[in-house]
Length: 419
Image (cartoon, rainbow, N blue to C red; front, side, top):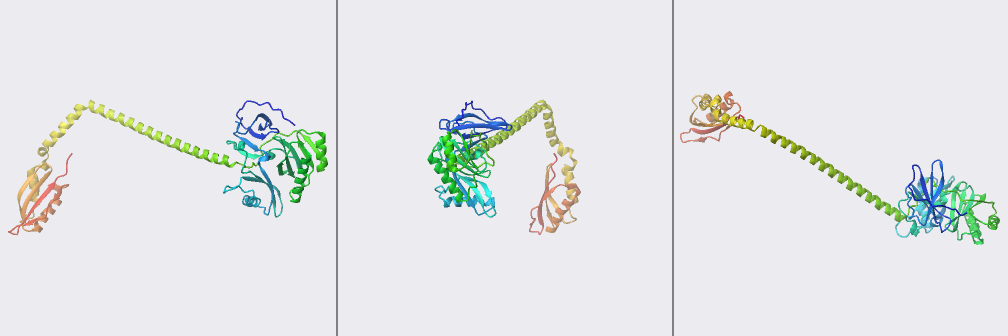
């Protein structure tokens, strides 16, 4: 049955809403945009020529036409679903459905009928030569149109999809087979194809007992009668129901779309990394700017303080210089005679005599002659232990032996610096 749709202006989805781009019944309106949400029926809001023209892609499922997805029901000799993703590619290779080159096949599957020692699964495979219009980015998921319709149990369902009939068959409540047919009307050829499909699936043990035929769309009484007679099943005719994204969704992502998404993700991470580096740079720059500003303020404060206290600073400097000049006079411990007195009291008895004494505020030097080396070193030890020379540092080169066997020595003493 033809569906009259009045296209509405493109809009964004509201909170909780989702959308599905579904193949339309005719080539005149090849794609339908359906919007649905919790607590409200699905509504076809507009039609478009290709998925690329549809701007409503966020939270949207692109339902691939049945003509674009290969169907393969398989019996797998296993019951553990974790093994199926590894077993299915081997079956695809055996049947010549492996893509050329090293590219892995793009497929997904659903469990139809688990048994004691084996499992029936329905596999959907994307062909290598997928229609260019389906390589549209930004859709959340890519699924199969036949999985987006509420199919009745143990039924053979027919509907128009882009001017061609498609058939979907269920085993119990689960989809077990789908195929696009050669024509858009129920002709003798279509009836022959349907009987062949039914017989082939029955021989493979895939098909259960069918209960009825569901016909969605317009057809004449003669077409319905011919269908009922050919397949020997009652025919129920109705309008095609609104589609909804199935759960769990298949992941039939075209290779070109997958590569484009990866490139976009790489660019996104590169942008984020560049943005993060820029933020770090700006933060460091701002921190350095604040530090420079605070330091400049501190320097300015010190300069103002220095200017305000210039006279006091000059007075302190003059006082300090005067004190250095007066230190030899006012510091009684630094009197040359006082130092010479303390030097004299450190001389070992009858062991040496002094020949030269020189003194300035922080340093003094004494020369002398000792009876032997031991007497010279004894004199140095006495100076180091003299309480009047606490904090002084001493330096005495090795004494030299004179012709009269006396040891000539020189001792340099440095007093601790007084601020």
